[in-house]
Image 1 (cartoon, rainbow, N blue to C red):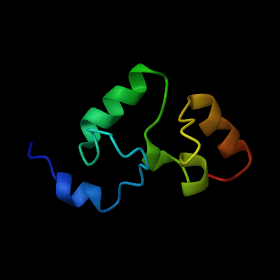
Image 2: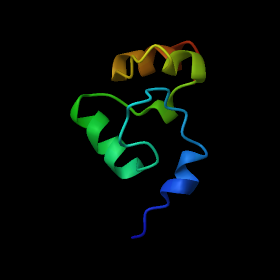
Image 3: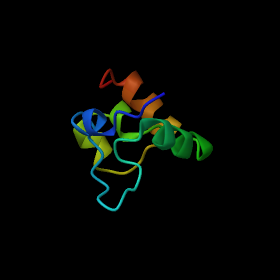
Image 4: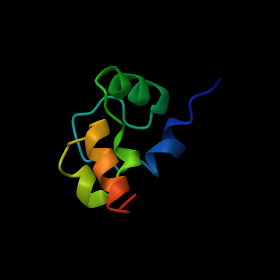
Length: 67
């Protein structure tokens, strides 16, 4: 399967500048799941900027109807 990195970058909301996985969604997802996290694209902009990408943070946002 061909990676569509350039297309993916147009919708990537990750604010972590030195990230080497931007636009490479399969690597990003794999990386975060190993740490019990979700990638930036699962979070609204204000929550993403906290860099708390934990499952627990995501669950709190769901309960608050922010996701």
